[in-house]
Image (cartoon, rainbow, N blue to C red; front, top):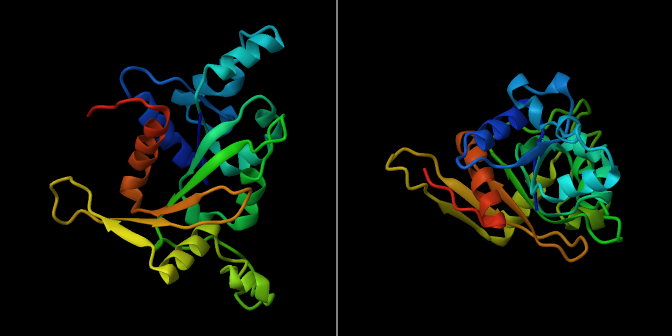
Length: 232
C-alpha cells in the first residue's frame, strides 16, 4: 500500500500524469478537491471514486482494493479519518526540502484504527541544492538552543526534516552517488542518502535528486514496493 505525497498540488498533478500514462492502467485515488486538481485527474478524486458507493462496506471495499493514494502533505495531514480505513506500507514524499518538520511529523506518526502505525516507512525525495522552505522568521529567531535537540541535528526551526537527515548522513559519511544509465554523459547524478530517525523503530530514508528525475523515481519506487513490473 503506497502513499505518494508532495508539497504542492502542481507536483501532485505531475504524479497523477505519470500514473495515468502507465499501461496497463493503474488504479489510484487522489485526496483533495476539484479546485486544486487539474480537470483531467478529477475522476480520480476520492469523492468521485466513492460516489457510487451506497454503504460503508462498499466504501471500505473500494478503498481496500486501491493500493495507491496521492495527495499533498497538507491535505493528508488534515484527513486523519482516512487512516481509520487505510494503512500504508510506505509514503514517498516529493519536494521534501520545502516541508518543515512540524508539517510532516504529525502525518508520519499517524495511528491506524488498531493503534499501530498508519504508515510503515517513508522516503523523502528532494534536491539538497534547492531553495529551502520559505519561513518569515530570521535565522536568529528560529535558532534552537536546546542541546538535546542540537545533538540530533535540529539546530534551526527553518530547516526541513530532509535537510536534517542529509546533514546527519554527510557527517556519518553514509551517502553515495548513483549516475543514471541514460546514455547522457552530462546527466546529473542522483544522490541517495540513508538516515535514521528513531520513531517507533522505523527506518526512514532521505533521497536527494534533481527535479527532472524526482517524479520518475517516485513512480519506480512505488512499483518496486507493490511488485508491478513497468516497461518503457
